[in-house]
Amino acid sequence: MNFYLYDSVKKDKLKFESIKDNKATIYVCGPTVYDDAHLGHARSALSFDMLKRTLKALGYKVTLAKNFTDIDDKIINKLASSDKTLKELTQFYIDRYLEDMSALGVERADVEPKATESIDAIESMINRLLKSDCAYKIDNGDIYFDTSKDSKYGSISHMVTNDEQNISRLEVNSQKRNPKDFALWKACEQKDVCFNSKVGMGRPGWHIECSAMIEKIFEGDENYCIDIHCGGADLLFPHHENEAAQTRCALKKEIAKYWVHNGFVQIDGEKMSKSLGNSFFLKDALKIYNGELLRYYLISVNYRNDFNFNEVDLQNSKKRLDKLYRLKKRLYGGKVGQVNKEFKNALIEAMSDDLNSSKAMAIVDEMVTSANESLDKEPKNKVLKQEILANIEFINELLGVGSKDAIEWFQQGVSSEDKVKIEGLIEQRAQAKKEKDFAKADSIRDELRAMNIAIMDLANGTKWEKL
Image (cartoon, rainbow, N blue to C red; front, side, top):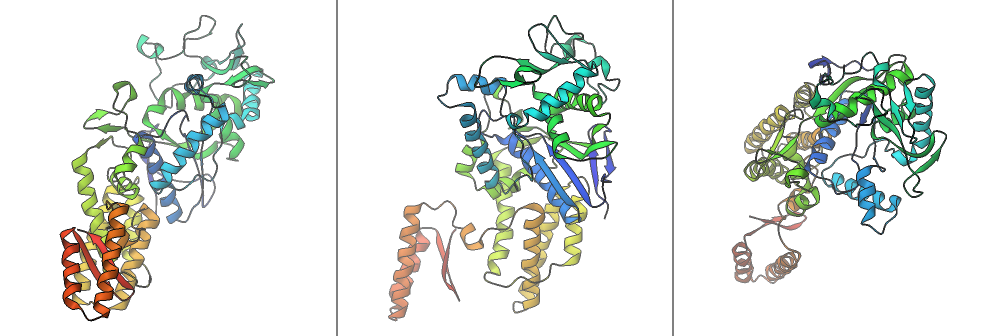
């Protein structure tokens, strides 16, 4: 089955052809770790988690690297108001990020490089750029990339011009050769945030770390370093433009064969931005909503489109996901059989069309409806039941939803205190039934129903759920 991705540079949907047969290499620009993850981080992580899952389903051996920028102006500013060291502060936010992404079912990257652990690779690339006069050092020790030395500069984003609006977005320094030149190395003397290297005491610029990490991690070929370079749409310029330029001049080849970018996250139609004061931290969302529900909701819109986060759509997503879990609960305790090939192929085909998750989820909805109808007609068909459970397992493998215990799924939103009370009442009811005091058992069932709790007597015990 062919796989098609929308390439942000070519601005077209392209057939994916990997550099090496049956292998796919992906690099994702990860977070700058100075604060907690927000919905924008979640959207990016989920988009490329689905990319990896889809390629694996298609038979590729996938290697995905996602970096952590752990030295940056924002981090240094955060350190000024913290009693932590650089490593302590950044590791704290790395751990928080990984914890939040795990709650969303995002698989860990195969390689997770950090800027501070890649200084040798960064230094090596800068030295090559200096020797070829593609980079230069100014009086204060800063080292800049000379954009005029890259004849293809601007070919990634198609956004680089000489107009004042674009130039105003870039660094201004009177010693720069060209207005668009950018820093590869920033000279500094602070021991806790600066590094002693062959290019001088200082720290790396933002763009160079990704080019250096990609060279260090991936073998590539004579034309490309990696198959797919991923990130948010906001990184296309200047970050990805500058990455590509550095790599072309240092390695004489393109950094990536395909460029893929996810859309922005908006809240009630307004672009999520800290400057607007409506940043939505993921940790706060996870206090209210189940991580799998957030995942299901966030992948309901194609990754390239901007996402409008709102309560109404999220609740509608919950109803759809609940239907999947009600089907799974109907088969509770059953054995898993063989996945239906037509269903599996239909899901993979949808995701092979530029990760069309909305179409894939519609196929899941159809399967749920059809499965319930089939079970109504053949409630004792073991093969049918096993196939449906296998279908649900494959949904989790490809889309990352449907893996939770079906009974526990419907116990969400019940406090620990109420859970203890419910379990106690269920034990009392079991004892009453054992003593043949059916009037008391019925009374306890009514008491639970008054608490909006339904109970089910199954072969492996009594289970309950919140209505």
